[in-house]
Each structure stands twice: as C-alpha cells, then as structure tokens.
Length: 324
Image (cartoon, rainbow, N blue to C red; front, side, top):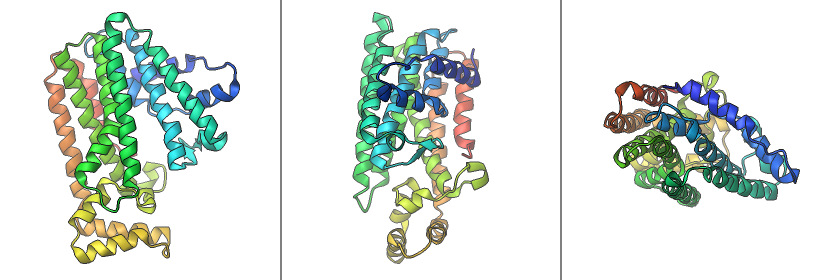
C-alpha cells in the first residue's frame, strides 16, 4: 500500500522522464516549461490512489496518471488565455512568455500526447477508460463555458454555480479516481462509488478554495487574499451573499462590487464586512462539511479492506483542513 506522499514522488519522477525535447522547439518547449512548473499533482495521484485500492501495484496505471496530468495542464494553458492571467505557479503563463498562438498550439499538442499515453493500455481496459476520459474532457469544457457565461450574468444561482464547479473541477478528480480503479481491477459498482467520492471531495475542494481566497491567513496562504472580490468573480460566497441580502444590503453589495473609486483594500474590507453580517463564512464552511461527509459515505461503501482507504480518508481530511 502506497502513501499519497509516495505516489506524489513516483508521479513526479515519471513526469521528469517525459521527453519533449524535440523539434520544433517552439511547440515543445512550452510543454516542458508547463510540466516543470510543478503543482500539487492531485489528479495523477488520484489515478494511482484509485488503482492502489484494488491492486498492490500501480505501475499499470502510470500512463493513465500521466495522461490526466497532461490533460489538466493543457486546460490551464487555454484557461490562462481566456482569463488573461499573467502568472501561474509564480511563473509567467505560456501566452505571456511566448504568445497566445503558441499557448493554443502547445495546449493542443498536450491533448494529443495525453491520448497517446492512454493508447498504451491493454485492449480490455482501453475502451472503458477512453470513454470515461472523453466524457470527463468534454464536461471540463462545459464547465469552462458556464464559468465564462457567468461573467456577463448579474446573478447566478447556487445551483448553477455548483453545477459549474462540478463540471470544471470535480469531474476531473472523480474521473482520475475512477480511471485508476478501472485499471486496478475494480468492479463497476466500486468504480462508481470511487467516482462519487471524487465528485464530492472535488466540490468541497473548490468551495474551500473560494473560502480561502477571502478568509485565509495571508502569511500561510502565500499570496494576498481578496482577488476574487476585486475581480467580481461569482464565488460560492458572493452568490450566497447576494441571495441572502435584504434589498438595501443587496444594492449596497452590488454598488461595492462595481465601485472603482475606492482602493482595493477598502473594497475587500467592505465586502467582507457584508459577508460577516450575513454569516457567509459559516454557511460556506457548512457546505464544505456537507460534501466532505457525502464523500466519506461513498468511500465507506467500497468493497475493499478499510486499511486500504486510509490514504484517501487522509486526503479528504486535508481538504477540510487546508489553509492554502
């Protein structure tokens, strides 16, 4: 049985062995640059952890883990263009370091490389895994479109927001776990249970992310909080505040969001003050706990030894306790 730390070390070493030192350099250098930037490697770790629930070895799941990681990073290249983001993981984004055309093309190449890795699976696993991967990839695109649609909508419901983050974030974690479980020999019932574990833990992860951007300790968080407030991003916190505010406070909150005549710190402080009056922090924490508890129930019902579930239980706990 591998620990999550061991799986992280294993997949990091495998990523280093990927060889994109080839011509034309303008296509492949951005791929090397992106993969070398690091990150938590959550998705490939989940592939290996899902496999390890049902198999003592994870070697057969490594191509799938690499495919999920390359796909995830491909989406980031394109997301950064859409969001006009200058920095990713404390480094210039690809479209800034090179240009947008390069970021688009290198991203496309990464998607193709991900499929090439999946093609290494034996025929009896390829069909089921590929169908899951394709569905997941398409759902991530759907989630990104909903997220872009929200930019021009004044009001977004909590239900629509949860649907968006489920597609944009959760399905990739869920798909990674299920793909690993399939390679590890899980039956259909257990594969679906691990998928639902991932879906709920992914929702908890994203809502916790929203919470941290507003309320984290800056010294621990590693960057200035309040970016979501300054950009007017429709987070779980803002959506609930707008839904729960009475007419006078609702108008006040809308004016604060649009106000360009106050400093960034004043805007952050004023909106957090509204959140505190409306008890938004506790409402958000409750929702994170709700999805965490749902995830644990799915994990408990998987038909393998309980000791094999320890690392995924630890992962779920980390979601609840993370400060950055």
